[in-house]
Each structure stands twice: as structure tokens, then as C-alpha cells.
Length: 292
Image (cartoon, rainbow, N blue to C red; front, side, top):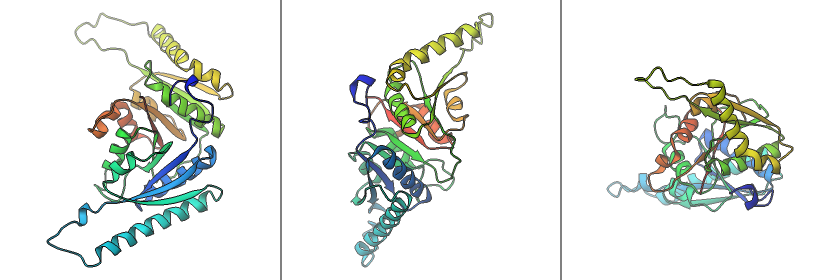
């Protein structure tokens, strides 16, 4: 996804949506979210379960009929997820796929317009807010990744998007504007700024009014092209003197969209501290949209 002149309207969201599932409550919520988005965008929905054999490859203690048992369990996960999707949105074209390998690696390499996953799976620590697979996929996938929690939330009719003064936010803005258009939702433009603290020079002062006015101008400049392309989307400016994570997660939304940048083999390190913080603390689905 690039700047507004890079693609025709509707291309941003069209294509194939993939929901990664493992039988957990968050993955079931991810399937529901993906089915809803497939209906909105006209995309196909493919449900993918990755069979990870590593925990069972203990040659000293072979399990009889292990192959059949594992594939049977995987089939149950896929069938349950498919039933969830078809019940949620009967008009959506749904398919399933059983893959094998390391879950994060397999999911992030899927060819799709969007990847939807739960915030944590069946493995890992019970108290963890985010699973390791979720963090790695969100940190490395080269397409929008939507992270969904199992807890239900009331529909607000508003989408929040992080706006900064770099090109990193452009793909996120494009995704957020299109989601707002499809939903008929208000788009909240969230920009946070913080005055530097000069512990050894307390005499340095700032005109907060001037700083805020300058920050508002940054937002308006950044979104001008998208606003021209989506004139019917209702916008609300939310410019705060606050930490970006606090600003992005303090307002109730149906979806929070954040940009990310960087790539490599270090997983969540390439999310950026703001994206990572929002994924941890947001109470609604979060879309991480990478800048290329």
C-alpha cells in the first residue's frame, strides 16, 4: 500500500483475507473479525491452521498413530473455525488450509491482502497479553496484520489511526481511511507530542499553544491527500500532549491502526515501541500496517 496515487480505490482492501487459527478463543474471534471484513471488502476468506510437529518430535518416546492423531486434531480446529465463519457471514466465500511448519514463519509468508490472528494462542504463559507467534507475525509480515482479542466489545462507530510526521504513517492512513469508508465510521486522527524535559535547564520554556498549532498542521498536511480521496469520511482531530501509546489506547474505538517499519529476522523488535505498546494495551482489534 502506498500513497493515494499509487492504487485505485478499492484495491487497498480487495483480494484474499487469511485468518490464522489454533483452536483458542482469540483465534475464534479472529475468524469472526476476518469474516466480517471479507464481507465488507468483497474478499475471499481462507482459514489456515499450521501443524507444528516440533513438540511431538521426541524420538526416544514414540507415540503410536501420532500422524493420524495430529492431523485429526488439526482437522477439528479447521472445521470448527470454518463453521464459525460460515455462521457469522454465510455470503462470504470460505476455504481452509492445513499447513505444516513453524506457525509464525508459515503465517507471515502467506500471500494475502490481510492477515488476521488472535492476540495469543493455546501455548505460552497464561498471563501473557500477546503470544510469541502474534508478535513475530505482526513484526515481520509484509501485509496488514490485524490482532484480535477474545473479549467482546461494544461497537463504537469510530476507528483510530496514528499519525506522525514521517512517511511511515501513509500506508496506515490508507488502510484506516478505507476501513472507515467501508464501515461508515468516523476516523479519529491521533497524533501525540511531548515537550522535551530539560532537567538541567529549567529556564527553557515552551509556548504550548504554538506547539499544539504546529502539531495540528503536521496532521493536516499528512492527511490532505487521503482526505481529498475520501471526502465522505468524517474526521476528528485528536492532537495530544501525551505518550503515543497512551494517546492511541485511551479512546474507545472499533479498530486502532498503527504504522510500522523495518524488516529482518528479529521479529517484534521491528515493530517499533509504539506499535508494540499499542498491541499490548489496546482493548480493541489493532491493525499493524507496514511501511515499505
